[in-house]
Length: 215
Image 1 (cartoon, one colour):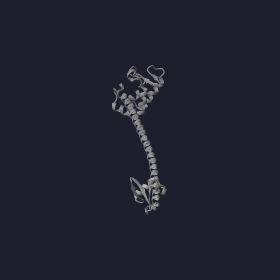
Image 2: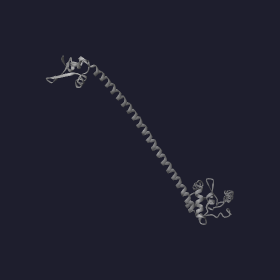
Image 3: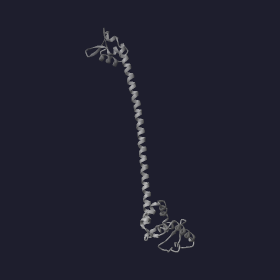
Image 4: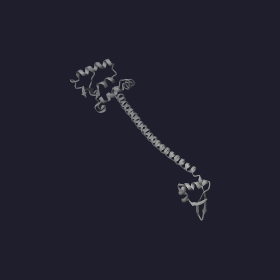
């Protein structure tokens, strides 16, 4: 039995100094401390059987490598999932913005339709007409009312009204409206009371009498 320092034992067993210290802690190597220096006791049974420790060290290294590989794989998966989550969140926000714009557009169109209906209601031609019937007709034909809004040029100042709007407010039957329209078209270029705006017939009911053409 002989004694050697940790460094000497490391060279003797062809392992690292840390491995010698680990064996001492596990009790597979005996040691003594003299004058503050640790010596490995060589020649005992424990000192002649280092192979199990070497096998355990190799197994531990493989285990640690496996854990590191798994951690790397998990980190990559987490990063991928975070990217997908961010994409889905951005898509959801975009969908909400689009839906908001659609709703705003719907309300904007409804506002235009409501204004057109109110213009019909407050028109001076309602004096002898059934207001409820006029409103019902205006609401039931929204597309036509919107067209008429374009045809009316500043009703309050110019009081210029399209023939189509004029006949609708008079509540004539469809057959009579067609007959009257044909009569207006016939005199459109000869009668100063009939005005053409963008190719459409317009009237000034507050300035002219059209009774001879709508009889």
